[in-house]
Amino acid sequence: MITFAEIRTHVFRFVQHVPLSKEHRKGFEKIVTLLKTLADPKSRQAVLKQVDFQPLLAYGLTEKGRTRLTAYFGK
Image (cartoon, rainbow, N blue to C red; front, side, top):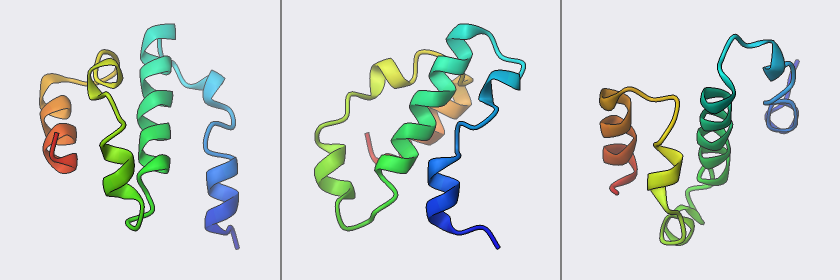
């Protein structure tokens, strides 16, 4: 059985094999890192105050995806 800790440490394993452009891969990695950082509900609000969403939304998302992500995090 795979634990949550193992998933967190292996989240970018084999990402080089995902067919994305360099810019889209960078955007994907930023979004996944954001989700990992904000996973803990206890620290989420404090971390959200420090996050600049604009660079995170530049690559790898459609307009609908950007809207959904910003709405989810209340930004």
